[in-house]
Amino acid sequence: MRIPVIRGVIDRRILVNYRVDPNALQKVLPEPFRPQLVKGVGIGGICLIRLKHVRPRYLPGVMGTSSENAAHRIAVEWEQDGELRSGVYVPRRDTSSRLNTLLGGRVFPGVHHHATFESRERDGQYSVRMTSDDGNAQVRVDGHCCDAIPSNSILSSLNEASSFFECGSLGYSATSCSGEYDGLELRTFDWTVEPLAVNRVESSFFGNADVFPSGSAEFDCALLMRDIEHEWHGRESLKAARGAD
Image (tube, rainbow, N blue to C red):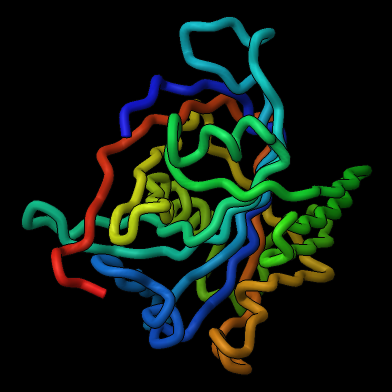
């Protein structure tokens, strides 16, 4: 899918991460993706991102739009052109923007579902809730700024966590065409993350016992990004091999 380079500001981005049984992850991943493992464990998560001044790069910031967005994501790897590649697979995107739901999957990558967001942010405290209009996706995250990621995280330090997720800047999203996935790359001008201590996290996706049996998906850590200039670059769509499920 060919789109213009999109520029904007990440006003707030919360990355809530789970350590997940690779076998459970593989069951929800389409071809050609497989879980990217860290110490034998898969990584999934939720991205809660508020964007502002979003517009084609050639337009001034005052002409940009703002929106709240959520993406369920899974760290993956795949073979392409004889090379091993890595990034994230996004099974679902939700947004507060009617424009995004209209244009998503048509003008820019990935089908977007409309949702209602409630957010409260004050004195380092963050609370974000999302409920999709179709009732198929709900997320709640409550947390506060802190000094370090949890000691039991599969990622041994904030620096390791930062590097891991920075490398996962290329994402592929489900589309309305079976076996075809739209590519989108995030490029930031100053990649900076902070640890976020989570008091409460709920996800209708990772909390679905029919998909992730008890104990197969556990909270790992959360990261916070604020006031980051960035660009979105469209990438060539990826198609599953003919005959793949």
